[in-house]
Length: 142
Image (cartoon, rainbow, N blue to C red; front, side, top):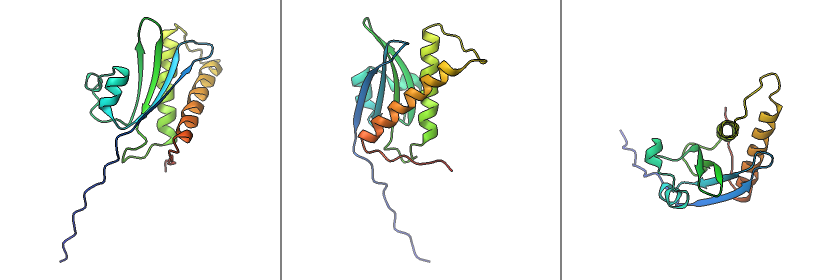
């Protein structure tokens, strides 16, 4: 029986890219971070991953605040061995939309959810634009 040669998984170099945008209508800032570097996320945004039960970056949503502004943040890792999908982007965008609505004391009206859906659409579109600038390839789920 032939012995298979063990192959070591090639690790991606550490990357940290972000963009901060103003949120129309609801105010505050919306940030998108594409990174595989937990330590840089902690340094740059003050998010201590271990306090959120995160030992590995994939897709996460956060709200950070200081005296001047609130930052609603999507953190995704397009360099993870599990490919980033459309579903992950929509999922994290929905978390951020929920945070914005809760923080602004806006209650969902399930008979008229258009404001919520438009907000999610806008967030998703901004994530896609940012990832396109980074030349990140997305994978469709099967």
